[in-house]
Image 1 (cartoon, one colour):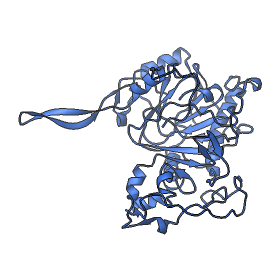
Image 2 (tube, rainbow, N blue to C red):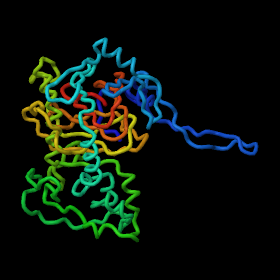
Image 3 (cartoon, helix red, strand yellow):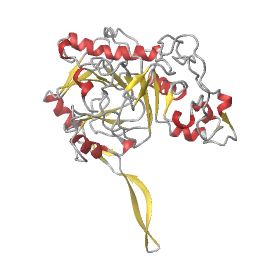
Amino acid sequence: MDYGYAAEEPAGDAPTAFREAEKKYQLYREQQMKMKNGKLRAGKLVTRPTDMSEVLDLHPDAAGNGSLNEAGATSSSGQFTADALQRGEVVRHVVPGCPGAVYTFAQHAGLVFLPAALPAQQQAALVAAALEDYCQPPARTNHTRLYGPLPGLWRAATERLRLNWTRRVEEPAAPQTGAAAGSRGGADEGEEEDGGGGCAGPSYEQCWSRDGPGPAAEQLLRKLRWATLGPQFDWTERQYDFTGAYRQLPPSLSDLARQMAAVVDALQAAGMQLMPAAAEAEVPQQPAAPRVQATEPSQAAAGAVSAGLAPPTGAAPAAPRGYEPDAAIVNYYQIGDVLGGHVDDVESDLAQPIVSVSLGCPALFLMGGRTKATHPSALLLRGGDVLVLAGQARSCYH
């Protein structure tokens, strides 16, 4: 999955520093060979250890061993991280209202890292919401194009049901009712609302049964890779569609995004130049909305990434003026999945930050520059970590 492009990319298939880093941290599985009855036979697949010696590990519980056991990683990253802190390449901050330290990066202006920002209970609730709620129609998923809306996917998987069709069932368009197409007004969190007056899809009973001819719900759940909330993005036209049916971003998720993004304002008020001056701000490219985006690891972990819940308690910094997130992508990863390097550059206001929440198993995140020729920094993410991309970081590969 590669979202984005850049005109500065080298022509042809020339290798880039970013691509080399992706290959370095990609999980590789090798088949062991063994002798049996005098013949060499294929054995089980084993994961090749990953070199973590140049990975930043800023988590408060890090023991300096750079462990990423779920992904088969080895080699210490502790000394590399300590050296980066000592040289000032990574700077630690204390922000009132934040549960722990906040980090910025000398080589990546606008990138803010909040390790362990969410407590375990909140992470668990976010994962549950991502699996049971945020993939509900009219939110779209990677299954929508082939199978159409799939209500109650998690429930159907737990009940061992099958889909009642083998391909998408085309339905006549429903007449517009209530708010006009593209209206932002709508239902409260958890309600069935389509954001544009369109049909949210078939009912649970119409969709699933024990002897349906389509794929098993459990199989579809395992193959779930993304779900989108808010206005849908047209990858062909590279712009958001405000006329089609969509599910509004739950208020609790937008509140969480605003609270995390407020850290940027707090650091800016303390004298840090994270955001560009008004005259230097990026020129809007498309009539699109700012969004809350899921974490995009280079070496991904299992489980849901990015979801919404009430923000943590405490006197958190005030939300940034004018920051109103209204779209999100929830990425679901299996062990070894990779999201290719890209730039998120289609929103109408690139001065607005992107908030990325990581849940589940550890993963590696690569932060590069404006072209893939820039060597990226590798950052170890764990469940509950939050990244904010603001200012110049909005125009960089990651």
